[in-house]
Amino acid sequence: MFSTAEPTEPTEPTESKRDRTRALIVATALRSFRERGYDATTIRRIASEAGVSVGTTNYHFSSKNELVQEFYLQVQRAHRAAALPRLESVRDLKERLAIVFHTGLDQLTPTHGHAPEFLTAAVSPRSSINPLSSESNASLVIVEDLFRTAVDGADHKLPRDIAEALPGALVLAHLLLAMYWVYDDTDDQAKTRRLLDKGLALFAVTLPLTRLPVLRRPLRELIDLIAEARSTSPTSAVG
Amino acid sequence: MFSTAEPTEPTEPTESKRDRTRALIVATALRSFRERGYDATTIRRIASEAGVSVGTTNYHFSSKNELVQEFYLQVQRAHRAAALPRLESVRDLKERLAIVFHTGLDQLTPTHGHAPEFLTAAVSPRSSINPLSSESNASLVIVEDLFRTAVDGADHKLPRDIAEALPGALVLAHLLLAMYWVYDDTDDQAKTRRLLDKGLALFAVTLPLTRLPVLRRPLRELIDLIAEARSTSPTSAVG
Image 1: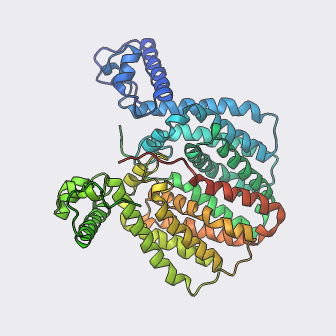
Image 2: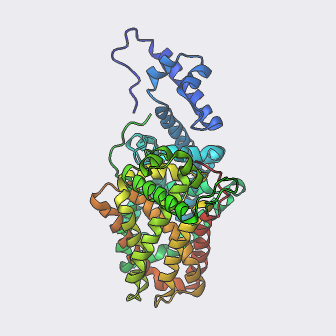
Image 3: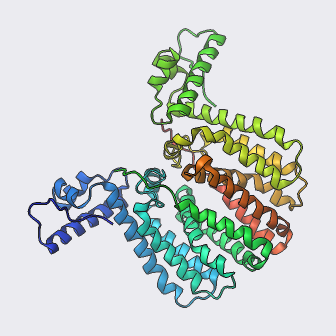
């Protein structure tokens, strides 16, 4: 995803030293994003705290937003690590989706105070840190794979085409839920958890209806169009 | 909504002259928002184009965002003027909602090129031009009243409590549709229109099911929680 080697670099540091420096920059940046938020985290500040030069930081990451992508990846890897073990013993589709959605919110929780800043920086379809941008695809694919695992491993009775299309729309539902969560000023964002549980309860009740032909076709078409929100133009580089 | 009279102003201009100046500033600002977008529109530029001093502009509007509120009001008044006549001869609920949603998108269409900027400026729950902020309430109430008119004047068979709660959730659906529209890079945002039509088709098919007690209660609770996205804390003044 990122070019970590510059072909014009005159003296290449050894692989291991370069990797260690890169890991240090990433760890410093992620801590700063968590603790200070997006706006107050700058390349200069990261370099200073990591004890490296701005030039070294720029050698590894050409912009702050490339470090945000590392942040996204870390969040979604933690999401996957939290969800997969809990999925092992559960077969009910609603319960499996609840696990993926709730563990997703768990990852976001520590950053709630800084969430409006991130939303502002990421919401434009022209932003390179928009979750739907091609730059963010690796993180979003982790979430989509989780939803696919949840659907595929469930003993549901969904029509096959609906089951196949569903994860693509659930990713968007996850992003909308995250947006509702940014706006949620209740303690521990309890309102968002309630919305999620109520939404899943309604989903479980309506699930058997998806086999009705009169519902199945418009539902399938709607799911496809929701998932199509992802197929936006390539974003311009916003640093 | 705005204090147009400053009590400390030493020489009060006559009411009519003050009103004319204010109207001129508003008209100039709205044209600029439409043509140049949010970022490139500044108080200084508005004053220069309106042929008044920056001080005069500040006397009427303490920030650019107060002028954005005038922009929102103009858009929603045009929305209402476009929707109401078309509602007169239609009784079907789906068709009536289609009119309100489509005429809403019609108002936005000329500003699509600048929409990402507005989204960025407005999306934070801390932004005074967030559509859900208390500052934006007068505009949002116009949209909610339109949806209420659409529901109340339809020959639907919705349970009464669902019918009463629905407009509050439809306002949020309208905002989400507008967000999808910002991301839509198809010609004339045709994909958004398709999503709307497919969504309404599914709504029409599922409408009779809302009378089933097993569906009615979770649906009602979900509608209430969606509408609750509006009840955020008071926003800080962001100019």
